[in-house]
Amino acid sequence: MTWRAALNALHDAGEAGVLITVAAARGHTPREAGAKMVVTAATTWDSVGGGNLEATAVERARALLAVGATTPELVTLRLTDSAVGDHGRQCCGGEVTLLLEPLRPARAHVAIFGVGHVGLELARVLARLPMHLHLVDSRAAQLAPERLSGLADAVATVHVHHAPIPEMVLHDLPAGTHLVVMTHDHAEDAALIDAALRRPALGHTDLGFIGLIGSAVKWARFRTQLLSLGHPPELLARVTTPIGHADLMSGPARKQPAVIALAVAAQLLLLLHPAPAPDATRTP
Image 1 (tube, rainbow, N blue to C red):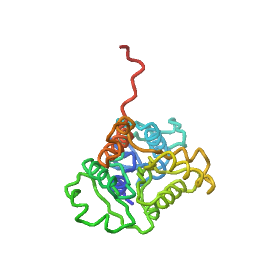
Image 2: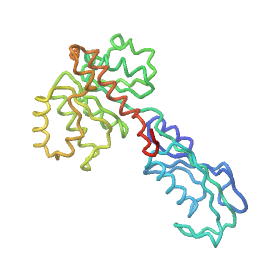
Image 3: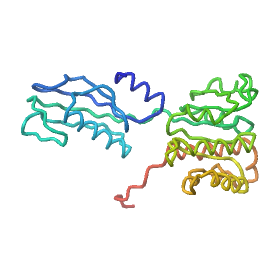
Image 4: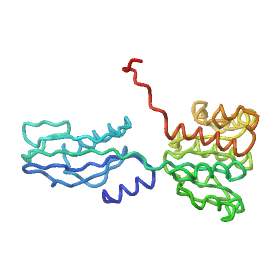
C-alpha cells in the first residue's frame, strides 16, 4: 500500500497516524525532498530512506501518537560518520529535515445495536455529527428505508447492517468503535456483550465505549452469566450500564425514548470530545 492509499485507509477506519515528509534534503541523502511515509502504532507504509534515519522518524512518530500530539514538528538528522544514531550509522554525507504531521482520527465509529424506539432516536441525534454511524438490527423491518428516511440528510456516514446474528458484525468494526447495546432481546444483548469482551480474545478489548441499556437488576444477571463464561471482573468493568448522562436521566421524563437518546448522546460526546485538562501551571 502506498502512503496515499494508507492515508485514505486510516481516514476511513478512523485510525490515528503520522505523515512523515522529507521537507529538505541537503547533500547525499537516501530520498529526495517530498518523499513520504505513513506510520501508525503498529504499521508503516512507504519509506523516507531506511536505516537510522527512518527508524528514528518512526520512533518519534509513535511517541507523538502515544501522547495524542496534534502539532506538527520538524526533525533534522545528519547522515555522517560522526552522527551516531540509536539505530546505527548512515554515512551518506548529507542532512535531512523531516516534517512529522500527526493525523488524528477524522471520524469516530459508533455502532448502535438495536434500532428500536430508543435506537432510532439516538441515530437521529448522532446522524447530525461527523462520524461513522453503524445501525445494526436482527430485524429487517427496523432498518427499512422508509423507517430510516429521517437520516437521509445525515452528516454522519451511515452504515446499515441487517444481521440475524448481530454479534457477527463486531468482526467488521474497526478498533476503537464505540458500542451502544440496546436490542429488543436480553439474550441478544448478553451475546453482544460477551462477544465484545472477547474481542480481540487477548484478555482485553480493542473497542472503545461499551454501553448497555437496562437496569441494575439486568446487569447483575448479565454479570453472573459473564463471570461463569470466564470473563474476569476487571474486564467486566469495561461495560458501562446503565447508560446516559446522569443529569439527564434523573428527571421525570427519563423514560421517554427521546430523552434517553439525548442522555446517551451526551455521554458519548463527552467521550468523543473530552474537555481539556486544566492547566496546573496557570494561576487564577
